[in-house]
Image 1 (cartoon, rainbow, N blue to C red):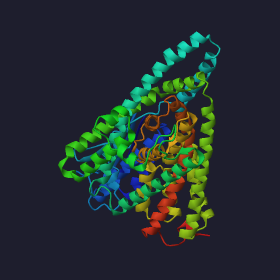
Image 2 (cartoon, helix red, strand yellow; image 1 turned 90 degrees about the vertical axis):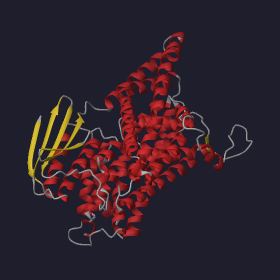
Image 3 (cartoon, rainbow, N blue to C red; image 1 turned 135 degrees about the vertical axis):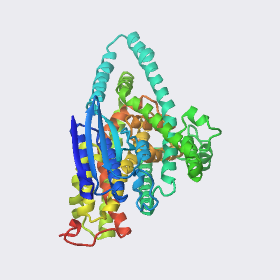
Image 4 (cartoon, rainbow, N blue to C red; image 1 turned 30 degrees about the vertical axis):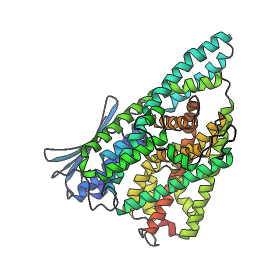
Length: 538
């Protein structure tokens, strides 16, 4: 397939080019998350070229498929103008959506910029969506069910041999390799995120306020998840000398978070110590910004390598899920399913509370009817639910904020783009509850220390972990190793996540649009009531 489109660089044509890219990639069944990242990168290039005076020069969009890849090339004639270099006058921080940022959040696009023969060229390569990603997992689950039931009808010696001498060693080896990989991934993701976000002028004044506001929402959702976990599960309070309960304190928890050396946290899979190390290294790199450019590039490349390795696990995760479900069935550990249903019920209760609180805030803070707000944002929320992706609702959210909520398009463009990629408040509650209920199912004692660590690690995973294939499996492995939960629960956790991911996406879209509306009201970037703003119309 070859599609070309020549255009004159302008604001209207830039939007047309972006829409054409999205439409073509959707026809080629590319993942919504990848489509969004490509759109952000290309929109950034077009906007930057217009700001640097290349309008109304001629340009060309070329989209072609080769083998199993889609190649997108965007050309604009004129003087050399790197669209991804930092602009010190950038109020919002659009330069945040540059090559390094998209690489850090798991973009496999391979975006690049070159200047050749009077043409500014941005190109990206994307893999075709090979097949329905849920199909291999569904097949693995069905095969595991058949194999697990069949095992119970085999002679005892045969069933024990298959379970203990074949399935168990393979599963243990897989989990050990996964643990080896996820620790560096978590370290590089946190370090590179701090270094990139904390760089001087990386985010403009408005962008920094949005970042802090989003961080506050994530902290609030983390506390909600922790409170729900403590209410619906048995959390052991510190009690020195009590039989069977580990004596601990917040002070001891802080001491344990400090690693004795640089090696032990990675050998033992201690996520909280890895996070502490990553934060220290990231902050040091921010302070030494202009003196460690090579180290920054090295960290970026190491992050990309670790993501690539973690992505490999996506291709073999069905085999891992098969072994996990098979061990659960063969080992007669069916009650775990009941605890997953309990977890889902608590999660839905938490999200219902969040939903109601936001509607109340709209009435109290903004003086607007909640029903009117719901009429505007619910279609995008349902779209995210159906597609199990907040990225799929990006265009509808932008239209809501710009035309129906009356938000300044500069603010909505940055916040919706930034939020769609990295803002995952519902996922924090999901991670905490799933970890705690799995611990309850396996009779792992839930102490205050374990709950606090789970909350911290969940917060970091939801805000810093890259969205690469296999990333969720790695994230759960971090939490389960830290909490002492047996590894065979990972397979069922991944299956539960597939179901919960759709709910996460819908809630994230709902929260994001209301938070952008609140931010616009505080920043006085909301259009006054008028005929062109739907939110104020009767």
